[in-house]
Image 1 (cartoon, one colour):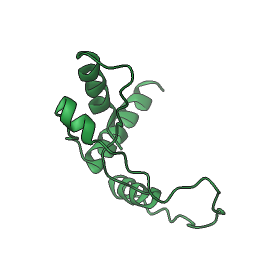
Image 2 (tube, rainbow, N blue to C red):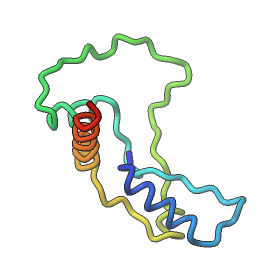
Image 3 (cartoon, helix red, strand yellow):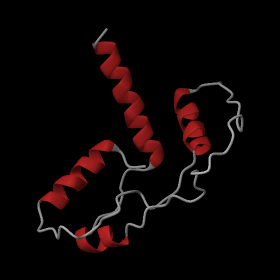
Amino acid sequence: MIYVDELVDLYIKIASKPYNNNDILNIGSGNQYNIKKIFETVSKLLKSNVVPDWNTMKNRDWDQNIWISDINKLKKQYQWKQKISLKEGLRRTISWHKNYYSDSC
């Protein structure tokens, strides 16, 4: 997962340099996070006591166990690495939502 501000900065960096149309860049953190990890992080940030009912959905044929993006080319060609952690990105996202929705009511 990449925090949106960091992703926008990366897109601008990529768009600012010559690009080969046949080149494929994988954009991601290079880390794998499952829903449980994201849920636990958000729950701690929100101080929530919601208890999910895990494993209630059948596995689907197309589900993958591994979905890590290979960002080696991105690192090499654009000297890029993720700076905002999962926890910090989720904290900022929660803060944005709280501010945005409190202002729009």
